Image (tube, rainbow, N blue to C red; front, side, top):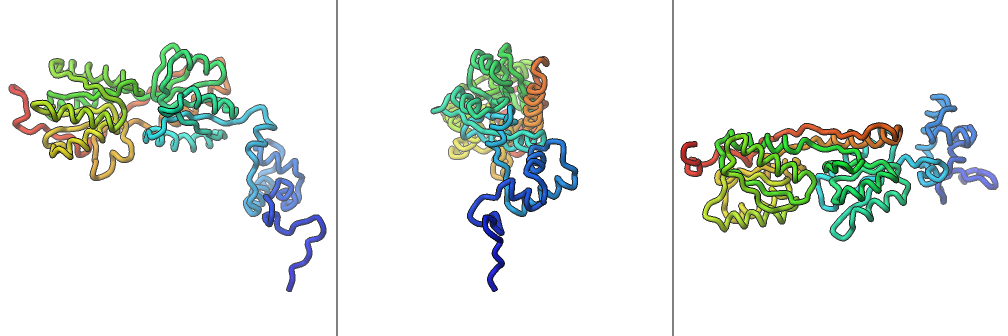
Length: 354
């Protein structure tokens, strides 16, 4: 039996042939379009019962508010821009944690990447061009002058890298404390020849390098301080491993600049037949997901990703609500995670008198 004709100018199901509209939702509930608009803008004026009916009708019809139209109709976008680095798993973890925090506070997130072929300036300009109200820069590879200039246009939160005097908010881990935890762990196992692979210009590298030297000297191991050039990539860890393998003897322990560097180091050592931790103990920094895999089982310094994300979003939102408040620096505590890549050095590798 044929379906009844819904009448001229009407569609029995708004989802057939076109996108459902706010008018369709209003018709389904039997209220005005203006009232539906109040509900989707989360503005006062609709009772809890009406709000529930509107949202249910929208779900049934498959209606989604046009976020672009909302932005054009409002003086605020309620969008936070995030600049991340391509191929950086730690940044991926941060972004994943940022989304729910932003949504909880009523903000959307827009991403823009910096890469060897795309400077952070281009990433920032793209976000500002899309009316992002504040920027979260994850380990930005830039200079304080650019950040000062950007902060005049929108609030800026630097996550993972400090820029003293740049007039931006900062959220970072107590890097030096994390390195001290790692060095003390290795020294407690009996290691003395502990080598550090530097992170170059990477976020937190200067603090980690300084923390390594201070920790070694504080433990009376100043004569064994050795820093190899590197960066926060697997390639730098591999290069450091090849350098160490070419020498007469290996250090008994290596503290990598981050987990990616440690992974490159582990790969080359394994291919050369060096056993970890029997021949060399290895420690990373960050605790990225791959570090937790059973065949990697990397001892590392964990950064509080959920805490960093929550602090970064809250700092940006607070700045938007009160532009006159003092700039904030949020420092989060690291945690040493001991896994299978560290152990006491072999008896023959111990230094005389140890």
